[in-house]
Length: 325
Image (cartoon, rainbow, N blue to C red; front, side, top):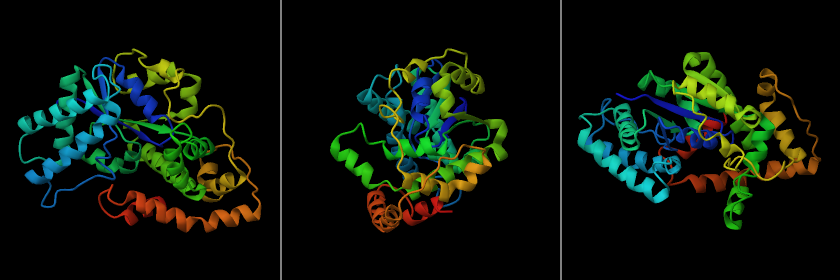
C-alpha cells in the first residue's frame, strides 16, 4: 500500500455522511463508500488467504459499486454519473495493476489507491458506519489505518432513526416506518455504544471519537481535530454544509419521541447509558402501548428478513443475531 487509507465509521444517524462530505472537499482527500467491504459484505477467500480470480472479480465488482454513494460528492468527480464512470475506470486500473494472487486487503488498498490517483488526492477514506463492529478485522489487515468514529447520544439517535424517512417520497417513508421498532433501535444503539467503547479500549491510538452534538455546536473545531488526526493540512473544507442542510440525520425541527420509544431505550440500553454518564429521558408509556409494541415485534422481524434477503452475503439470521447480543 503506497497511500494512507482510513475509515469513517461508528453510529448511523450520527453525522457519518456529513463527515464524508466535508472531508471530500479537502483537496488532499477522497472519501468513498458505503462499501460494507469489511463487514456485512466481507468475503473471505475460500481457499487459503488469497482470492481466486473469480473471487477477486466478484469482490471488486461490489466494492466498486458500493464506493459511489459517497464518491459522487467529491468536487473533482461531479455527481452520480461521473462517479459511476470513475468506479468502472478504477476497477479496470486495479485489474491491470494488482499483482496476483491478492488478499482482501490488497484489493481494497489497490482500489483506494486508484481513486487517489484519479482524483489527485493523497489520502483515501472509506465510509461505512457498521465497520465499527469489525475494527479487529480491519486492523489485522490494515495496521496503519485510522478511524474517525461518530457517536450520538441515545435519544437523538432514536429520533433520527425513527424519522429518517420523513423527507422522502411517501412510498419510501412508508417503507422506513415499517422497518422501525423502538426495541430494535435501542439494540442498535447499545451495540454501537459497546463497539465504540471496545474501539477506544483496544485501538485507542488509532481512534478519534466525534460526538454528534459537538459537530452541531463547533463544526470548525471538529474538522481541525479530524484533519490533524488524519495528518491532513487544515483547510476546514466542507463545514458550511452543516448550515446548508446537508446532514441527513435531521428533519426540520425537533421531533419528540413517544413514551414507548424512551421506555424501550431505557430498558434495553439503560446500563450503557449509565455507564457512559449520559442523561436519561424518562419514559412511562401506557400499558396498552407497551403491549402493542411487543406484539408488533414478530411482524417487524418478518419484514426485515424479507427486506434483507438477497441483499447481503451470509446468513440474515446471523447478521440480526449480532445486534441481539
